[in-house]
Amino acid sequence: MQTEKIPYKIYLEESEMPTAWYNLRADMEKKPAPLLNPETLKPMTAEELSPVFCDELIKQELDEDTAYFEIPEEIRSFYRMYRPAPLVRAYCLEEKLGTPAKIYYKFEGNNTSGSHKLNSAIAQAYYAKKQGLTGVTTETGAGQWGTALSMACSYFDLDCKVYMVKCSYEQKPFRREVMRTYGATVTPSPSMETAVGRKILAEHPDTTGSLGCAISEAVEKATSLEGYRYVLGSVLNQVMLHQTVIGIETKTALDKYGIKPDMIIGCAGGGSNLGGLIAPFMGKKLRGEADYQIIAVEPCSCPSLTRGVYAYDYCDTGMICPLAKMYTLGSGYIPSPSHSGGLRYHGMNPILSELYAQGLMEARSVEQTKVFESAQFFARVEGTLPAPESAHAIHVAIEEALKCKETGEEKTILFGLTGTGYFDMLSYGKFNDGVMGDYMPTDEELAEAQKTLPKVE
Ligand SMILES: *Cc1c(COP(=O)(O)O)cnc(C)c1O
Image: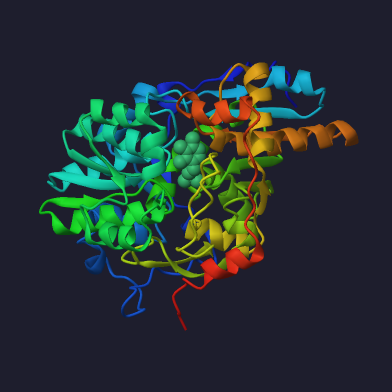
């Protein structure tokens, strides 16, 4: 029983911060399917991955047995500059909703890059530096990953080339300038700099770009330049591994007060923040030590878990990355440009996909106008301006808290507030002007995109 009043913010001492990342696969009886080589359709070996990815990160990607990876001291000292991220008891929100539910959120937007992505960016930059590389290339959609990576690269004195989805490049000049301030080169994608970019532009001259296409350009650049590797801010298992600092910190903080969440909610783009938040809890669930209701929230316009298929697919539009078995809409799926709420990726992390296939977590999809209504409500009540991505989780947390109000259940709800909305004011502007629409792909559109799936026996 809780006797002490829970503070608004539960902080951790430096000595209580995580010293290792947790690899959820170690506790999975049925492991996620292996990455496949798109040419041979055989499991990808470390050797085959090494022209594209950093060696240490490949080890983390392929390792499904080691439960804990020690966080190197250099990374821990960087983490100490902006972590622990606050775990907030949303007393004001609870009161405003009149719910008996107890609501907690973990806020990852307190660093300059504005989101959880820095947790993995700093790890990836560290391993690239340790390998003696000159630089890294990457893609960025909304800009958070590129920003995080530029910060991490400047810290370790690495060159950083960012391919930014064209519509974001145009819509988010401030993101672009933050990256350039940290020393990164930013190119709108598709670009004429790469063969894949030129091909896509020849076929679709008016395209506003997509994450998958930007990934292809970044991979091509990394493999054609000496001393460069490609790094990715979501989807991959290594990224989810680094993001487990979110969940481990959260669990340590909750444990201090004997709090057990009944429900854990996170927004899902490629799945890294959700996977990182739920990891230690899911671990307990897999080991049969506790049960939690876990909900992934995705946009209606890019519904990979709720309307996708569980199949091998390319991680990128250029079809050069390995094949991953995941819930996917097809790598050729490009969400409508009217969708401004982030989470645009066509697939979902393979670990989360397998957990979802096993029925260990749920998924819901929500319309962006509803998401922005909840974002605005949350900003007014809790003070923090959320990223639209994060507001997907807020929306479902509010829905669930309102259900508790009807049933009188005192559930404990935990959700991930992944970032700040400061860089999303154009989208907020559309919402405030009442010109934001909702977009839901038809079954025919989804079927069309599924035709881009590779044939894997
Ligand atoms: C990138 C991003 C997401 C989605 O990515 P995941 O890998 O699914 O976590 C969510 N929220 C914010 C603020 C982001 O920047």
